[in-house]
Length: 314
Image 1 (cartoon, rainbow, N blue to C red):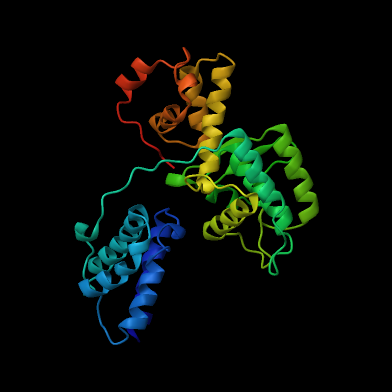
Image 2 (cartoon, rainbow, N blue to C red):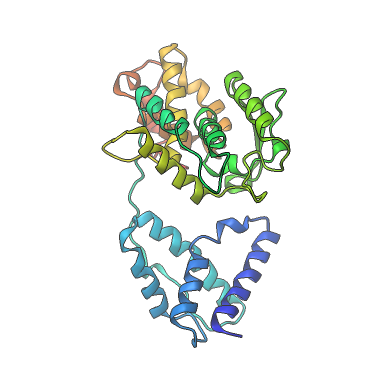
């Protein structure tokens, strides 16, 4: 068995164990499979993962953000720790390669910018391998924006998970392996009904031609293409996750404009978005425009004393 084959075999065993414990395989696949391929290509005669292999692989990450590098390290550390636990000779990745994380600052598009972005979505042309792209993207991106979903969540929706009579959406095993139900607006429900009629019989609500669901990497590429098509040129380029952030801030801005008490309504928004801790929802309060942050509907003194460190739980 080659070094590459042995790593693939061990990685598959680790994934099976993680899956049996209730974790998603997809959590560990990004970056680790790339590292295994790197080892197979550059160290075909090796018998163990070494410090030099990790250092050589990470040298490719000089062009990506510290956050991306950190995510790669986390997955690689998990795999090397598994190898050590089953008696394999290996270098176990430690914090030596870590770079301090850069605080995430989402891009919140304004009303006219959101309108322009969705124009870019709607004019996206067909691709040679995805003839229904012009139907899929307008519904997919609107669902993320209108329902405040994480990018991966609509991609995991089976057709049966959306009740087209009531608008109930069943989101399975999302972040931290939790399920939740949300309700779509009447406008979004009407759009989903028309989309479902056009797309016909299938297993996944958004489905590839080969019958499998799309992945988030594909979705990110589509967002970039739609952004280019829109003609927007913002100081900082938004990403798919920004649509979820826009949903949260737009919802609270609407409450402020209506004179509602945000502090009372925040737990409902938190549950809708699937946050495990309300402090993650409170993060969005700090993104509101200054005129709305001064609203009497936000008790800032209470907010700062109870949640002194507000963070974003994507």
